[in-house]
Length: 212
Image 1 (cartoon, rainbow, N blue to C red):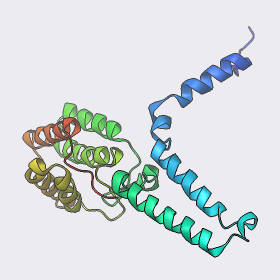
Image 2 (cartoon, rainbow, N blue to C red; image 1 turned 180 degrees about the vertical axis):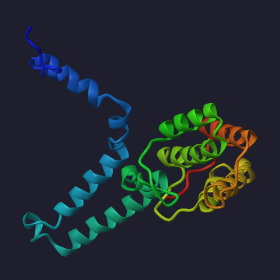
Image 3 (cartoon, rainbow, N blue to C red; image 1 turned 135 degrees about the horizontal axis):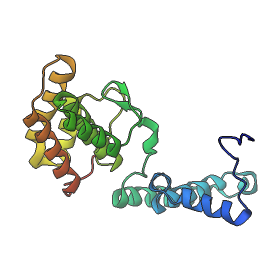
């Protein structure tokens, strides 16, 4: 009997390869990383402004350049007042979360919390669900989570965006610190409380986004 290889290399034709590529790029992870129209507009505007100082425009009259700079300043100030700063690259700090290098998405953390709940590991469920709260708001660009951000600091920032949940956010942050750093045991009610908080925040309309 002739043994066949365990895996046969796939050699798709051009049409199939193109379809696979388009399907891959259509996934939410790739779409979320795309720059917004506002990002593109700012980039194009800055490129035009930089072109005023290239060799081709080196001989432009000083008055013309001064007028161009004044127009640029006025337009930028008006745009910032109307639209805010361009969206920063959310992947730049995606690995930093409460002193740990954790690159999971909020959805992945929620699944981990649900798995811990199913096993009766209430402490792990509390930790994972609070991380999901923070990562979720960071993914929505509502609250920026940087290296060095503490659970308490995050709760205060999130409370500015969701004032009605400030007390629950602070209580959840205190519970997170107690479980993680003081080895306190969480209860089923603790895990359910943070899960409910996460669900409410995911469905709530923010008061205002925190400046990034």
